[in-house]
Image (cartoon, rainbow, N blue to C red; front, side, top):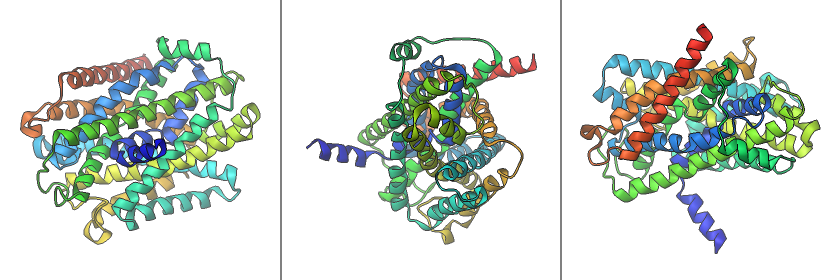
Length: 422
């Protein structure tokens, strides 16, 4: 009985759950590993802090997609000026492409820990697999594949339970925020906010809610037709999104706990790569923890890379009024798939630069933290606009929480910039 209920519940989960899981990509894993290694349990409170805010923002993005039948880029094109549209799309593409490269590098390095073949070969194999799935697999099957990949995140929850922890210190650090104003601490807060409340997730969830409507024949294609959206549809999307964001934050919490209890406690305060975090865990926590951590990086990367490439392709394609969507075959959306292929190829080439993958991942998270506030401002304005959203505008709670986190992220980014300049 319980098993069948869990199956029904899992089957009901969709774009919100996948988006939340994709948030814990190798960039997120690297940032959370760095957090635990450098600051111990001190920033555990951020997992509790970000949950309600990222839920509100992602719910808003999902609702915009459902109500308008357009992705965020399409809505911005229709209702705002071209400079705003092109700025949003450009920032997203730059951030996403660097992130794709860093994620591919982290996955290839982690795969090398398991099977000793050359890094370049792993890089090409993983990139080809991801690209092939996006281009040649029909959307319903592909969405199901992404959903199964979310299960790889349980590796990080399992890892935590094969390690000894100081649960009292963990509880205190989770419930009582530790605030410091030094450069490294503030930079890491911006990185956490940037990798948790990420621009590519805004675009992806809005687009995938539209893809679901196309799949259920509510509209013909993206940007063509206004779907009929019921209160039940909105309620189900909110449940899906809330579960996804909770899952994302609980995984983040477990990664920080695991690395704080091992790396920080063992006097290892910096990690150069995500796969290095897995290697360091081996003598400290045993083979099982090492294996689970490495497999988790590969699984989450396979989930995140198509979402990074796809969100950029949706954004550019809608801005230029192309045919877009994973529900379309290659022949009907060539420009869309070309952007996905190009972003993946550039991501592969990024790995042949001299920038360490972890450094790239970490500073991409910081870049996301700086890019997110202006995009969130646009999302807040769209969500509150009755001409765009009709009866499904933001609630009072959504407005208060949304503007609050937009303000917090803006202040954190400005504070970091001022600190670095000073």
